[in-house]
Amino acid sequence: MAKKYSTHYITLNDKKLEVRVYQEFRNSLRYSIGKKYIILRMPYGAGLGPLMDLELEKLKRWVKKAVKESPGILDQLIPRVYRHGEELKVMGDVYLLDIEESLRKTVTAKIVGKKIMIKCPSNAKEKAKQDAIRGVIIKLINKAYLPVVTHRVNQINDRFFHEPLNSVSLKYNTSNWGSCSSQRNINLSSRLLLTNRDVIDYVIVHELSHLKVMDHSPAFWKIVEQVMPGYQKCEDWLDEYGAECNF
Image 1 (cartoon, one colour):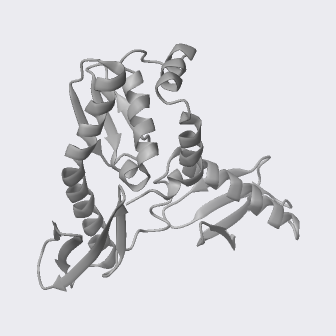
Image 2: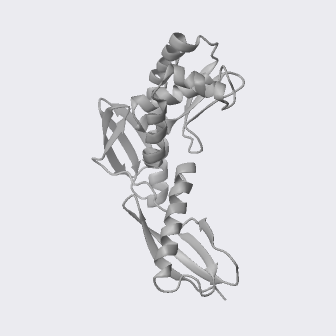
Image 3: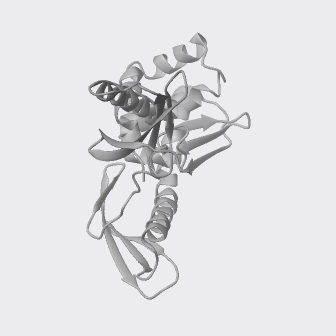
């Protein structure tokens, strides 16, 4: 027999999210994020009447924290929908999405001026279609902006660090904003392209600083601050708005 649950909702970034509440023989609360809804498990008798509102507020704070730590964690619950005529802002450039559906098997995209021209199959299931559109947009934007980002990394390195650098890459990574490998490769998340130039510079400075100090010791942060004294403002911006920067 399927377990009984009650359905509630929380609102996050103007999105209404379903919450399924299960009352069980347990001593504590447990939160989790599923593919279709958020799950709250609680002891029998807890969350009665007005207390449920309090528990949902606690849950909402937990979800916000989870999104900050893993920005793509709600992608299954709030799928990204690309629409014809929508604008996409990338590093200050504004592109118009021109989506054309027809009887075809694949999704293709190209940049023409300030338009992203997308062709996709009209008979595909909506989720598969949107996933494919998202994939080609990310691939297209990565290719178009990698030279710009690489140039900026080299500019900052040449001015402040003077460190040997192996390569720069853009990847759609939701677990971090950037990384620096022991092979001296700088990897930046494509999501940075949806932030602003100060934030992009900060993440570049952060990763280049790892070429000198690989950990996050006081010596590391001293280097970051010397190059970018106001870096904390960028950290704060990422904390507040970073979760919204997703393709």
